[in-house]
Image 1 (cartoon, one colour):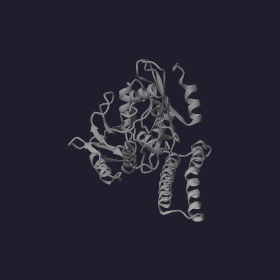
Image 2: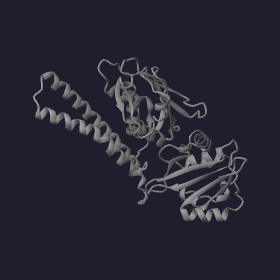
Image 3: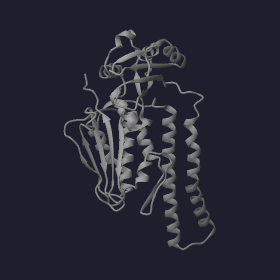
Image 4: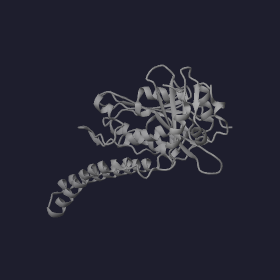
Length: 363
């Protein structure tokens, strides 16, 4: 990767409206383009950033994130990219003046080795592109999946209207219709959640310094429980744990994970939610929320598709899943600059870990 000639690179990226920061093999800033400085609102010359280490540059950029979670850092971006190529990007918010915050998408490109050479590409994603139609493609898939419960409801309603059935059969048919209506409602809610998140591209989040214990306690207290099941067992530190979060959306993600834990453990058993810090030995400034159940678990194939949209989970002992809920959770967690991990085995239960960056100390 040759960084010796910066002017052609700067010219090309200026046409595309993208900024660039390049790092040499010593892990220091070698190039910062004018577009990058403009996008970040930096009132410094490019030479001021030259020679900064990855850690120093990461700290500088994190300090410019005046709203929302701060930049997670070059080291974590590199690690994520090596583990999962789809995680090479994250979005930060830069507040300039009295206007609305600017959403910047950061993308890390580096050699797949321990060498520190790499580039950070930055672009403004505050304005949706009118030509980007890919975000709406999943609605066509959703329409196909919605037909099944609709057809079931229509069929049973027609039988009840046109035929005389005994009381027991009527009750059975009505229960099936109620279950199908509940499934249809759940699917439509998740589909519209995904559509809204894709359309807004993270601009509808409202971050604030929030107490994790308070959020978890409220979710657990209001969680609808299956008949005969106990509330989740909560294990949390006494000292307050603070995160930068959109409380409503992070609550939605926690509720979905806990609901899954109960749904896929139909034979009972405790559902446990444990909070530990640090959440990741590779990132000491994080907290881990670990939800564990003693349910049916997943096969290796199911586990590999747990975050895929529209991958249908089916099991003879429980309601089929449509593969939307965890996709929503993944989008929410990643918008909080967190990591989502799932481990599971058939008949041994499932464990979901949400790793979130801790909020900085209040000034």
